[in-house]
Each structure stands twice: as structure tokens, then as C-alpha cells.
Length: 328
Image (cartoon, rainbow, N blue to C red; front, side, top):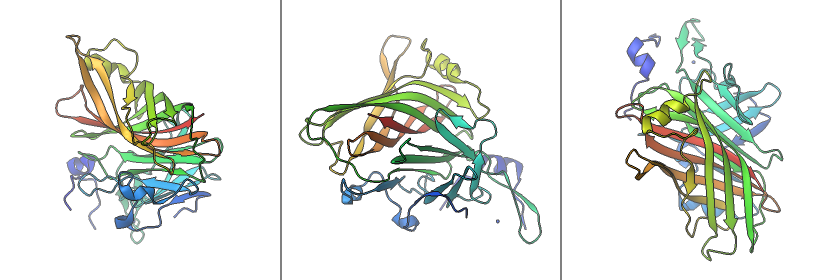
């Protein structure tokens, strides 16, 4: 497998020549790397509405996606353990010392050093490995996102989201959900990492379409921050010539077949803006993956992955991986 060298390490030659936390809230994928659940395949619908569901990002060697195979949260020590990521120290992420939370969701970071167990030699790690973790007030749903800004292209990482229990899906009527959204932004052709926060709503028409309920949704009030917590939203807005005070709203594409019988939601979404000529242009596009939970279908948890050409730089692609927990 060929993979771009870590940006800082490739440029500065920082690698030495000559390396399992017990979480109280584990969410583990029992399979090997090859058996990792794929949130985009038909095999996801083997569970029923009565089952707990855990989904992981599809593994892709060429991009580094989907390499997170298990995560666990230790509430007593407020640490987050991530498995299957190289050079993130001892796999235990502590609460970020600059930006501890994005809205209600906790942010963690891997240590930037590790020591040779024989010689004691200090080994620099891939910096800016971050983990974003969210859990609902009931504990029914949770998500985790792991990304890094240490690679020239997208680095190794992944995401998961889970329903810890069952769902009873309505067969008639409609339901409205609102909640918080936050995520990590990494880049192709630029080694960096940013954060994003926002608000989100989703509505489901359980009567129509006949083939898997109509779903609409939007992510709005999105603002972007660097890893020191500085708001850089205006830099992006200026680059696209927008007078708005937040990034363009992300909207769901409405169509049949996006809700399965086990309560999973999968569909496309995009955001748009008016260019200097007054024409509507696509800014971002991607997909959402989610699952409904509860006896009254009262919660939704999921992940959004969208990409765009970063207007601040030539030839740079921005990827935003955001998590959300919504309540009815």
C-alpha cells in the first residue's frame, strides 16, 4: 500500500530511526480490519428494528478511511481510546487542552510523544490526531469521529455511530427532530485540521413515500475554527464572495428509499451559494448516515461526510466529517 508520508515528519525528518484503556462505555467492532462494518453497503440491513446497531466508516486503503476499528470512553478518567491508528502514542486520547468541547460534544487529542520501551528514546508522533465524541442524554445513541491533519492527503481515521437498543418506527404521521452538529475538517493537498459547529433539524414523513419514508433536513449556523479555537469562518465566506455570517446551509436531497425497516437512514446532501454573477453554485456535496432510536423513535444519531474545493487555496479539497444527535 502506498500512502503519502506524514507532512511534518516528511519535511522535518522527526521520526526516530533505530511503541488499552479499559473504557466504561465501550463501542467495539468485533471483526478484523477486513470485516469492518461498511456504512454504505447493503449488508447493513441484516439487523432488525429490535437490534442494537453499530456502523463504522468503510475502510479504504487508498484514502486511510475506516481504520478506526474500535473505540471506548472511560468516564472516570475522561479519556477516549482508539484502536488501529498508527503513531497516535498509546491509543489513549486526553481531553484537548485548547478546545475541550464543540458544543455538547467532547474533543480529545492523542499525545505527540511516545518512548521506546527499551532505550527510552523519544519518538515523535503524528500530531493533531483528534477524536470527537458525542452521547445522547439517554445514552441510547452515540458517535465518534477520528481525523488528523498530519498527512498531505487525508490521513488514517474513521468514524462510528451507534444505537444502543431498539426502535419502534411509526407507520403514520410525521416527526420533527432538532439538535446539535459538530465535526472535524481535514484536507487533501494541505496538512491541517479544523473544527466546525452548527445546528441541525430533520423531519420524517412516515406515511410517504411508500418506498421508505420521505426525509428532509438541514445543517445551519455552521462556523469553522482552527485548532486553537480561532473563528476562521469569515476567511471562507470572503473567498466565495458571501455576505452571510455562516457557511452555506447543508440540505438533504429528498427522495424515496432512504429509511430502512431497521431504522437506518442513508441519503445525499449538498450546500449551495450565490456567486458574484447571482448564479446558484454547489459548494459542498456528500452523504449522511444515521439511525433512529427509542420506543417513540425519539432520537437520531448519525454522521455527515461532505467535500468541497477549499476556496482559500488553489487545488485543496476540504472534507468535513460531522456528527449529530437529534431529539424529537
